[in-house]
Image 1 (cartoon, rainbow, N blue to C red):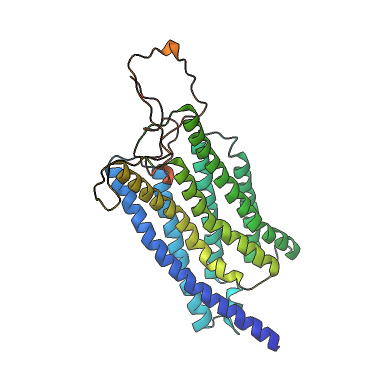
Image 2: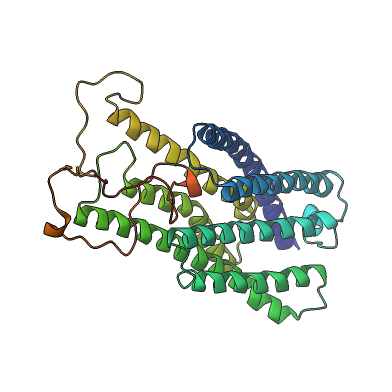
Length: 346
């Protein structure tokens, strides 16, 4: 009995810590979200490339995360202050017949689906709308639909799905999420890296104020690591059956939102710094006596007396484009996009 009481107290402690951390992370996320919206709208006014799909997806994610946070507050009041389901808060949080508990689980699932679909679409665009490239990520998303739908059904109607089946599907949630995240991040990063390599090997990179493609890759990987590390830790804690997993559960939702707005903000900062260096100024606006030389840019010297038949050129299989806007959150242009690395006519 004493052991059960200690376990219950530990669970309640972890839930309170998770509640506090979720509130803090949401506050940081709200600030970052506002900043990313302002940057996107200002860029659109300046004529920069603007993607309505990603812009409004970011807004819809913010709405879902905000609703999630308010429901979390409502649940905390009902569990710890009102003791709606006696004898303790743990009993309340485990009762999915309460609308707020079930809505809580539904929002988490929908947000993960939304984020996965958005990343798959980004991958699809970057790979020149190649359906074969996103086939496996798409199948993983369908598997995620099936797994989470079954678990949500079991939460709402415990007698509808056998406990052994629920246990199996619950154990699949984090591995599927991990596979999805690692695969899409890897495909996006590889595509950008391959374009960077082609540009260097063929000399199709021109000196410009755009940030290096390797910087874009670093931003993508580092931002995606937030979600990846959380999923790995959740998987480990689930296997250990450790109560501390409720802390990561609470912080997962605002962290997903942070991943996307960080890409926009870090891309904007990196591009601004690159443009400042190229214009002969540092980030603070002080003048510099020379322009920096970096290994990431290769100048193409234009000539007016070169005959095409003397120097035949074959087009690349994939077009190399300059990362110079916030489009697709990190500025990779789809086919037919404006701007980019390449040969100059003339």
